[in-house]
Image (cartoon, rainbow, N blue to C red; front, side):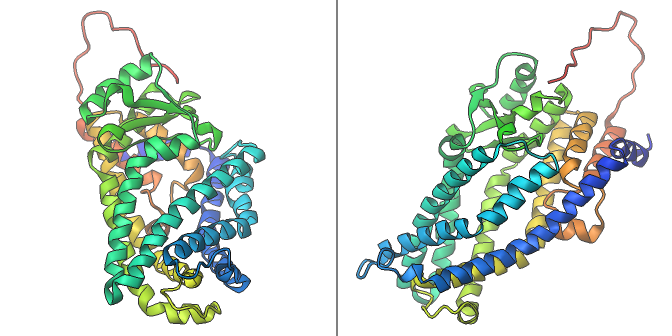
Length: 399
């Protein structure tokens, strides 16, 4: 089989208009990444100049932990309000323009408010403990802060499937039928209990076809967006679910926590050295141990994270390739994976240049992933003589 020809056939089937729209959407996302950094810096400057973090409602004399918590919550909520127009453009208007979402504006704003509240609560707790480390640990505060982030990320990984995600979507057990029958053996092999396979109303926020597997131990679960039941074939659902199970089996969430912890280590270490300069540029006079300097601290960490984006994306692409490989080896649906990947090309240019992919893509390009699937198929397809008996009836169906 001609692997490249098969790959081209899948992508070219999108048609020139659809491909052009995917390229425009993806290129816009690259510019948004840079613009988001500028917006965050401007927002931090505005919060610092507002003197909100020195207000008596926020700053509690003699109660540093309470001050840190209220400062963090105030900073996160005010930042969300300042950037709401930008958020509306990037996450609602633009998604509707490119047909990636059909969520009503009222529902979007309601979920934005809920997300802001959840982020403020979690951020207040995390930053309260980090500022405690800043005050108590001296020059080695960045080591303690990294440990705090690692513990916090682990707790979030455990809590997200059962506490946080159900706040935004409704999760229901996967109903009986061909899809459940197909996924049960896969979940058993992965160590996920059969009663932990869910379908959720992902179409509420996005028209993207996706699934995920996450949690640990009793919180482990497989969740499939209802978008998969509105035009995907059974082969595609099996292939994509196999990919997500691969993430779970290969413990990519744990590896992700390790990477975030390493990034936090570099960010906090850098913050200790860059903070005076950033604080001066933002007109922040508070020392780093004072929560009133939070805009400068957050900006410093954001700058380090932005610079580290290509490295993090490279690691993410590696994990995604491993998950694809797991799906191919354990599910064997090379064509199902390929057609599912073509659907993701609507929001991810399938044929980026090497530099573009290296810097901006947290998944391998669709072309690369389909080519790997076709390569696997060319090696593992076994030709057998036709059976003498009548063929069995087909069980393929759309979902």
